[in-house]
Image (tube, rainbow over all chains, first blue to last red; front, side, top):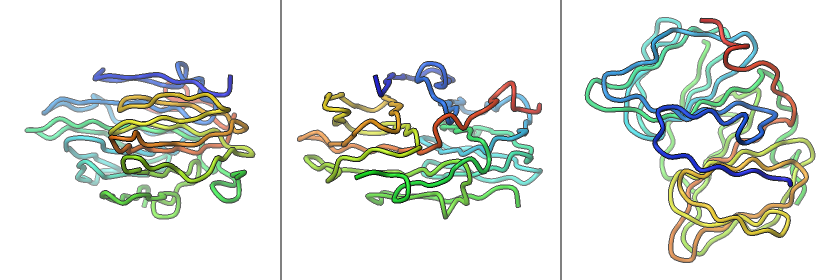
Length: 115
Length: 115
């Protein structure tokens, strides 16, 4: 079979790599309630992270800089950057995090597609 | 600077690779109004595609099989699969498409993170 499908609900965190049989990315869907944060700062050895804010608002602290976040915002964060995510005091935040190996993409769209 | 940020609205299609300076993925955000479809079938040479349905409903046809789609559904599609996406007759569909090179991910999360 050339595809896999799953349906997710309102879980606080879902990791998709194993359930979707991903081979080029790990993807997680995350929800933080108002006033909450990821309880640690982290960086990466080799992976670029791409974040999409789907609902709500909050902020990230990236290498000590505060970056405001609300629905419709997208971030690309380099592996070595130190990052931490926070929901707003008065609103939760739901976001997707995509981990991919930095510099791994070769062709894409018109140079990789066959129509 | 170790990050980039953009904000997107309700455009029919936004491609993020260049604006976010992505190196491991291409990501697009797509909206099809009720009754519309992507006007072609396509496959890929090397890239796995990961689709997330954010709003609405519709279906995909993957290698001739119809797969129903609604908000909360995620798909992983192998490069060679022939695919086409459709909004429902009575509802639009908004989805994210992530292109990554198949088999490019090495470590992730606990094996790539530094806490």
